[in-house]
Amino acid sequence: MPLLEQHVSLRPYNTFGLDVRARYFARFGSADELRALLALPEVQAADKLILGGGSNVLFTQDFAGAVLKNEIRGLEIIAEDGGDDTALVRAGAGEGWHGLVEYALGQGLSGLENLSLIPGTVGAAPLQNIGAYGAELRDTFERLEAVEIATGALRSFGAAECGFGYRESVFKNALKNRFVVTAVVLRLHRRARPNVQYGALQDTLAELGITGEPTPHDVSRAVVHIRRSKLPDPAETGNAGSFFKNPEVSQRKFDELKAQHPGLPGYPVPGGVKVPAGWLIEQAGWKGLRRGPGAGTHGVHERQALVLVHHGGATGQDLRQLAEEIIQSVRQQFGIELHPEVNIL
Image (cartoon, rainbow, N blue to C red):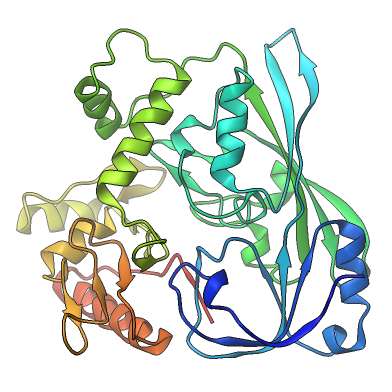
């Protein structure tokens, strides 16, 4: 039976490094251990938070309920299809996402290389349909397994049932807080050509001296290089990666803004144009900002305006206030509404 602890600091379990406390805290390494925890009277009566790597959450206060940390492990190829040169890989929800990417590459499988070095765990990936550098989780998603919190029943969800959208899924909306992901199954490729359509990837591959047809390993190496050059390491500077989603606007709205701001970048998407939130935030003057006494306790990363950072000594409320001011500033200057990608609690 997993140990249920009380009044536990969550500082080691969130990448902002905020020292808030959980009324109850426990780890589980299997669906059975999860069911045992869910059956405890203390847990049943409490609000529940399922925590993976803590890389997509901003705690603004102590959590008065039960924090259950998903540590379900396991990486394996469960099926091969020689006809279309694909393989099904099953990963435990508590595995680190980048560990899964490295496993796939080590097995000669492609499809995840563009998603290299994204922080967090496998179980969190489908909740927000993680994506980067021209790829999204749904591109390779086959199904997931999840335990229903109310009944303990294990259920399988296919791609259509997950309702994937841009950083969205049914688990952030209609089924929010109703299921706990225990495993994810992906369909990966043996001979697929890597996706290098994203401009920064092509530039970085050239910078690294990779010519000709890049391999999945080459693409992963380029993505890792980009992310390490632009994004702070949470082990050194508290952050949760991209704090805001890239907003989407109508073509008409984009054309109007482009006339006023000729440097405005945009990428066509169904129904409109996606605008980089980082560009908007930088143009609004927030990039590199530091707040707080001394050298500053929190602010906006100096190399990537999309990232809010915690240097130490700030609270979650401080960071939330900063985020709200950035949203208001971008709204006033561009008439565009930014929405957090991070879960604010």
